[in-house]
Length: 237
Image 1 (cartoon, rainbow, N blue to C red):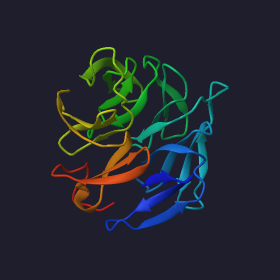
Image 2: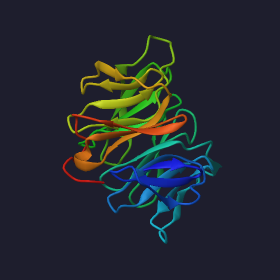
Image 3: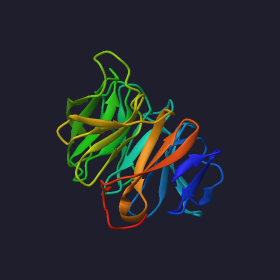
Image 4: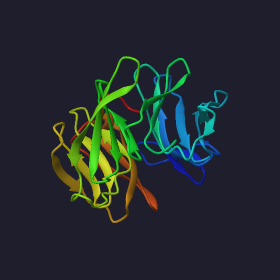
């Protein structure tokens, strides 16, 4: 599933495209919750349920009386809570399963890209300096603690271009970056790079047995057949 022409498109295993949402209001990041709802982080300064039709709603459009700057990436946890970035500098916000918006951490320097580990105990995000992926421990209430450098993804002080982040069933991270899609071990070691001619922006595992990595780049969408299996493998999405 990816955004295109202002809407949300679904790509099936044969590459057939179906439009699900006509106007996503500039959704940059998309995530699906356990109910099958598609949630978008929108450049129109809000986070909303976009699909299925009839269930659309705005989850949040401001925090502490202030409108957001530009929500751009998000991830849904197993409880139905939503972490998102781009609301304001230095902050990752969290929409609790009950619908309350709280500050998950105020220790994220301009976060971009966000992902949860398979066990839900760790949040990963790209933060300035953009040469580092930062990891946080997740508290029971959804707040984040113990920020620490997880992976050095570029030469120190050099921009990596990290944007979207995905994980596989083995706990490896896949990050869209200037050089392509970087593959990172669960211990934070760079294992290699899947090269792309176009700058990747976002990515996710899907398809049969979740062994296809879908990558949205500037100028197109691509799929890479993988030996690795995405989280929840063995099921089609």
